[in-house]
Image (cartoon, rainbow, N blue to C red; front, side, top):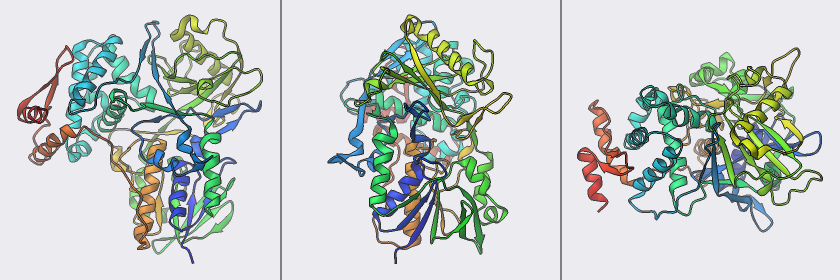
Length: 546
């Protein structure tokens, strides 16, 4: 008889775990509280029947785990991965109207990648008005992080904020606005003064490497609403594999006896399995942490200290299409940290009478007053949110919105508005904060039949993303394979890609860290954007490049 596994949660983490387990012959049941699977990645119809999402989806080139899974979801003779469309441009929009278009560089990949990266960042940042000396400083800080050993990254840089690490207070206003604060708020709903230098810097490097590499699509999107292109075919494939996907069934409790999970209460009834995979968001998992569960796995107490914030979407349905740019737009100094994408150019089979365009936006800052309402987004009415967002777009796009007719609009269904005022968010986003690595558990717990497949789990990705959830699920499944002494192939887990030229520097820094010596930067960047070696390690790297 096959080993049974109850997967609690039907978001990306839960479905990824179910996928890997089903491929290895386990008897899997998924329990999801919503009427639609997919968690924050799902899409759903508005009351008018138009496609809406929690927020737009994008798949950076550094994602490896999720595309690997998508390649194993069959669709029309190919796979769901074939639904990717490359976004070719990135619009950096500013309130002063001095907007910039960035495109991936097309330089040859070689040992000179670091110089290519530095040149790309230098050109892009100076176009935004950041002084050359500040751009050089940022690059040196990134090279120092990349040259640091893992121990220093976790025990030093993770405890320091990105703001402090780049010494933002000593830099220019443009540096603070665009590079220190703007990018972190806009991209990951984090705050520079709180986000760890380790995570903020390493993810920024991944995105920059994507942009500066030849041949890579730095930014990929789907060619249809997410549930149509991906989640729907995924559920069909899982069911074909024998997975039982049960919707509108809420997980209410976990029973513990003698250090093991004996049952889960789901929709008022007891559910039993040999193993349990908790793939629930942190705010839900906290409600299940009984004294018995906390005692059996004390590391779960750290979930109480993890931070969530709002990052939710709003959709504008337009009479005529408004492409703006063939990719994403970042409204870098917008009060509500807006990003957008014009979906019509990517949704190949889009056809809704009277609707020519769909502008999908993410609002990443809900606690900063808007310039028109004077209120934070969380205290606005839906109509005030709509008007404030549109006004902030006008501030950045100027006459590009003249004559644009908004036929309809829709705010993420997770945002609800009780009387008399104020909003609640059923789906907040876990955000990275300095020192939070210590509060995050591993996918395999001290409870021998409980495994975690959520974005708060320790992963290489180390960010609340679809990629992080998928990686966590792979780690959870590997834990089950170990616990059952299975001979099945383990799920692949990949570290973030880093420039191989700096591997010797990381090896040397491990020795320096053990000696409690500071981390030297092996490279410096001149105000002309040139990379030069520094110190013994830098000279060694210079020799390697010859």
